[in-house]
Amino acid sequence: MIEIIDNAVQLAVTLVCAGISGTLALRQRKQAYTILACYYGALTMGILYWLVYDLITSYTPKIFYVSDLCWMASYLFLLMLVTATASQEERTFRHPAAWISPVISTALTLFYCQWGDWLENIIWCGLMGATGWFSISGFIWATRRKKTARRNFHLAVLFLIAVEYCLWTASCFWVSDTLANPYFWFDFGLSGAAVLLLIATERAVGK
Image 1 (tube, helix red, strand yellow):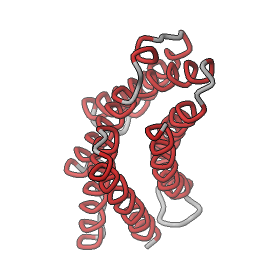
Image 2 (image 1 turned 180 degrees about the vertical axis):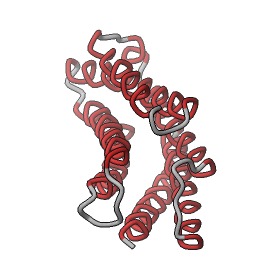
Image 3 (image 1 turned 60 degrees about the horizontal axis):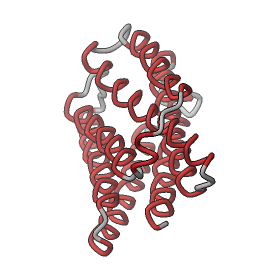
C-alpha cells in the first residue's frame, strides 16, 4: 500500500510540474521550459505506467522496461537542460572536481550490475555521470562569478542526482512495503527534488 501511495504522490507532483513548465514554455517561448516540460512529462509517463501496472497486478518486477525507458529519457532531457541553459563561458569552463561525478557513477554502475541488467545500468549511470559532470563544473563557475540563481540551479540538479542514487542503493538492501524501508523516504525526497528543480530552473532562466 505504501508503494502505491508513494507513486501516486510522485505522479501528482510530476504532473503538476509538467503542467507548470509546459505553460511557461507556451507563454515565454523559451527552450529551457520546453526541455523541462519534456523531463517532467517523461517522468510522469513512467510513473503512470508503473502505478497502473502495480494496481492491476500487485507485482513490480526488478526490470520494468516501459517505465525504465521513460525514466532514461527524462534524464536525457535533464542533461539537455543543464547544457542548453549554460552560457558559452560556462559551457567551456572545466574544473577537475567535475570528475568526481563520472568516478562515482562508474563505481555505482559496477555495484548495481550485481542486481540489474548491465546495459541498463550503464545507460542510467552514464546519463547521471555526464549530468553531474556538467553541473559540478557549472556550480563552481557560477559560484566564482557570483551568479546565485545559476549556482542554485546546479545545486538542485546535483541534489536530485544524489537522492536518485540513494534511492537505487536502498533498493539493493531493503525490500519491504513499510515506511521502515528507507527506499520510500528517498522516493518521497525525489518528489521534493523535482519541485526544487522547477523553482531553481525558473529563477535561473528568468535572470
